[in-house]
Image (tube, rainbow, N blue to C red; front, side, top):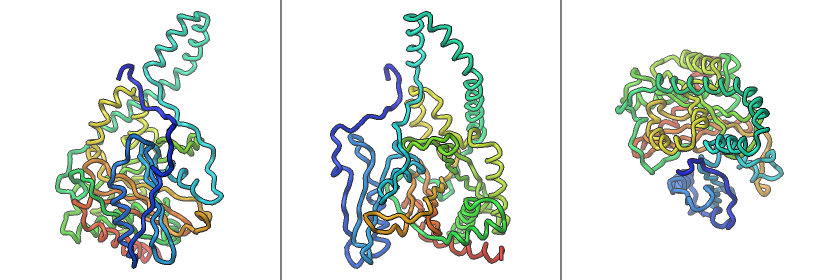
Length: 394
């Protein structure tokens, strides 16, 4: 607290791989749900804050001599895109670009340091003043962007929807549902309707939620669920560092009240096009950028409050992190499937992650089991929605 400063990266002087890498064996005969259940038990356990916040779990006992690797990283260590870069380093012959330690955001001590240097070396005052003057337009632009994000957050905040199954008391119990879709099917729909593959996936998610809610007897004509769509900032900034978080985001209302699949897709496209026109540097979805621009002391006070208010802005996270379209092997074993698992915000019951790899979209649905014990049924509805869109696009 005194002096107020942010978290910083340090090396683990007592690093021991055995504290991070763990082996498991599934009982035979192997059943698919056993792997998902074990993965969720592992994910439900808190990471030990006395060591670097990552673990690898090697799981054997799968049919056909296959094995699984579960990588578990705290979000403070890496966002989704960074986690992929880190994970790729485990594969044979694949070396991500050189990484650097993330740079801590400036704190109040920076201004004090400049003032002290001016007192010691008055000649530096003119040079520093010129540099500051040259940088003023940039700072003014950032200040305007920060104010825009803050006002957008306040305008976009909504009252909680307690009747929604996507809103639930925070619980450590999780259930993982996985499914695969053919990427060629997604691309054919995109080629006839325009937009992006991510637009098609979001429309499929909206349709799956609609069918699942109707099956449960829940309403679909009320306030639409709002998804937070993370946006990777690395490519835009030319920064390929693996560590830390370099994210912005968009908000997208999922049109579950619309019965026509084509109109759902058009509505998603229009919402995402509007987001992209505004850009990832503004709007309520750019909350991570806003967080980067406030002092560390504000983080310490505001973060616990904001983390419990996620439902005021969005109802679920839907993220898409593609892999390189090259064959990947680990000690000679070919990678066949990769299912992403994203954390749940406080009070939220569902997180959806898409990962495209070599012609297949792998989807992981991470659910608060106390709220969504039937998340497997939600996964089952995706295939029907895809078939319906394909028929309409034929």
